[in-house]
Amino acid sequence: MKCDFFSLTDTGRVRANNEDALAVNPEMGLVVLADGMGGYNAGEVASTLATHAVIDRFDALWSDGDPPARNLPLVLDAMMSANRAVYEASQTNAEHRGMATTLVTAVFQRNRLTIGHVGDSRAYRLRQGRFMGLTRDHSLLQEQLDAGLIPPHLARVAHYKNLVTRAIGVAAEVNVEVHEHVVLPGDTYLFCSDGLNDMLSDTEMAQVLLHFGPLERAGRELMRRANEAGGRDNISLVLVQCSPEPTRPLSSAAEMAQ
Image 1: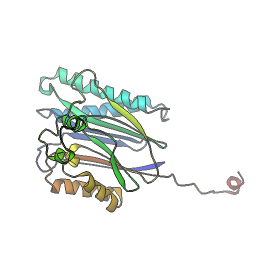
Image 2: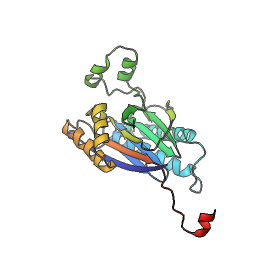
Image 3: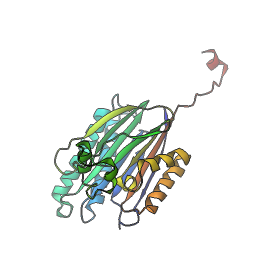
Image 4: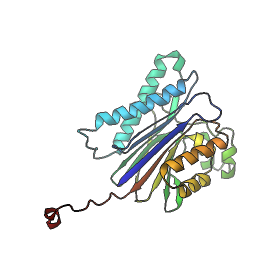
């Protein structure tokens, strides 16, 4: 499977600085996206620390450029490493006390996608015209939706919709949700901070992905629309599109005979 990547982040129309962080490593098939929280720019510190910790852990655990046999334990290990990095930093610097971040880590390898997430940053998949979420928010709002205490049509206007129930760096240990999915040719994946999905509905995001062609064009259109809708938070997104590896043409008589 061949996957193409496009990433974009923006401060938005309201915030003074960008507390989101993201990283993409196409060679590893790796996507990392974090949305920090905390005063005195601590949210920016938390998201950057978490993102770097995941990248560093993947670098350390890949041996001789060969991918590991299983990605699920690697994603879990990397995210736990990120949690330790943010938590320890928050304990040693008074200005960063209480900082935390959401975190999504995704690995595309062969025909598998492994996703780990904590918080309310999201992963979506567009497959054969159907757009669906692959993660469920760790948030008070999601808990109330699951319990039937609030109808879905009121979720987007709930005042407490951004109150997360899990985050990287809050405590020495964190419960990371990790799962795997089969990747099919033609799939498009969207990873984003809530600055995107708070501004645009799932239907609006799906329409952009369906009608705006190449990844960069679609990504920039999503960003434009989120800012046009108010841009009330930092906005970050990563788009990934997967297709079959092209068949290498036979280049010699010897190859044709094999």
